[in-house]
Image (cartoon, rainbow, N blue to C red; front, side, top):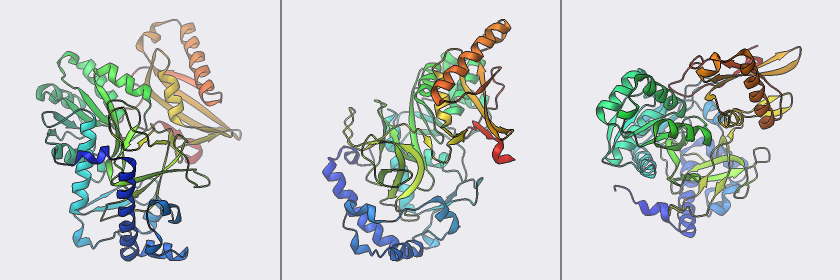
Length: 432
């Protein structure tokens, strides 16, 4: 292997010492090279020498996506543009794009982290990996591509697009691994079934990310394709895909703690939470040169576990995400996460993992309609059977979220399929 796998098996004391050394260097670097951080630290009376190790982490201020937007495009970079090898950016659909710069070393570290993730999925240099994330400013495609090459695997840079062509290449090339969003992999599975080539694919494992998905969806993917599906996590501001992934044990996502220092904080008080408690995930980038970040609030809701994993790795594990604090819907005073509804639907027989939530306001009262794809066989049944299924689904969802909803059954493949991040919510309250 090109990287030192021993970093994933360090003792907790060894990892803490390494993180402390790197945190001190990080604080010194941003204080002297990033005006934003220097002013922010000076406002609270902090100097680099006040940070002795990770025990002083709470003294440092948080960073948010708004900070990146306010300093658009290059105000948070810690090196001259001449040292920036690559730039990625978010889509900016909810505001200004967030711009991320990478030095040559940053690209190397990123590639190593993604390669570690691929190893956790039991893929290696003898595998053929199809990358079906979007390439370009989005970090998914190139991040996965460079990591697979670092691993020594053969890479098929398919990106998103013609799914039938993707499946044809999967068969012809003998693809054994795929990296894409989980919703797109479900669409690929449907296409494989339509083309009648299920017995011809050699796929063994997938690494899926860029959108939240449930444990039930993982089981659905594995059942449809006969593979092991792994959750890979990352975000552009921190690096891109490869910050964490789950191993063969599927007991949480291993964080590459030697590069990314995780915290879980209460989303309201911002106070640190103990292992096992759900809160907002916060990261400090310990080794990044181009865009180093201190205590970046991801908005992702999860918990953390620092105990060793059965796989032998000792790195901290974050639980499958409950959702994002900014994705949470408040409907008639009830907090609703789309993932809660997805989990409830997948526990039922007859439904598919494809659904759409439509939130509206009628006569000053919030309403929630859940459109659910059901199997073809139900549309050949009597109307009474469809009505019974509708009531069952409405009951299961109400039990999951504590809110009565309107359920509308729709035919298979009638809801739009996404090749990138899936869209499950239309909030007409915001549109109006």
